Image 1 (cartoon, rainbow, N blue to C red):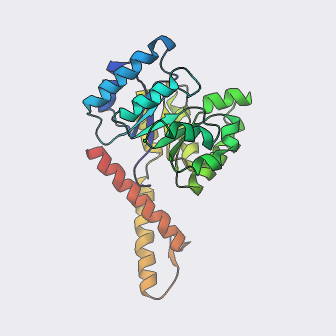
Image 2: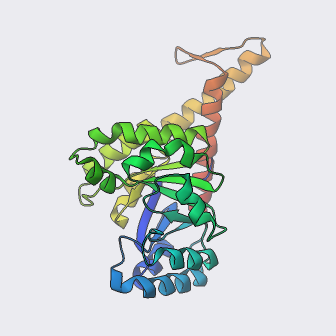
Image 3: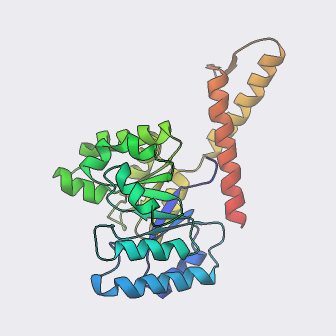
Length: 278
């Protein structure tokens, strides 16, 4: 999983100016939204607007994911069929409760599927959803989840976040943390991004371009981490050459499992550098 997913920015599918601006933003993933960011009277025109803008191209190496309306709404099925013909990389389904929901979408599109994990039932069924062969990504919908749990704090959702991460890691699925609503509170965003990174998330969903730089920094390897990874790999190679199974770096034991992490760190840094030059 070397492709970066540090920042995943929601862009309303109904706003041509915003869709055009997104072409120049340094984000890793664009979540083209036909659901929450679009009012009911704009749903049908948004679908056409988004298809036209995606057809123009210009989004470079950014991952392009289209969030459709739920299949239980009057727009969902047509959204799914339209997204299948769009120049996008995946379709994001809201409020996924079970693998059966993924089956329903898979019957309408050949695109890879991402799942919004934002309901209590969906969290409890995270493992079966992650195991579905069409699923490539989880996006945490923490606002909807908080509503359903009747909670006011992120702390109350830690179990849900970790359950989804466990399921995602068990099946090689991308996992992206939920949004931080106070888009003018940069310090608060930094704290939540760091927490999400410490949990193990691949990136953060964002609601405003001003949040991109913070997320990109938080979910990228630091210079210190890159340096440590480089030294660990070198020290372990030297130890192996001398017939040893472990090395010592900065007073800490380095085994093969640490080298797997070190190589992943360098691969991610290299992928980020490549993305930022394209």
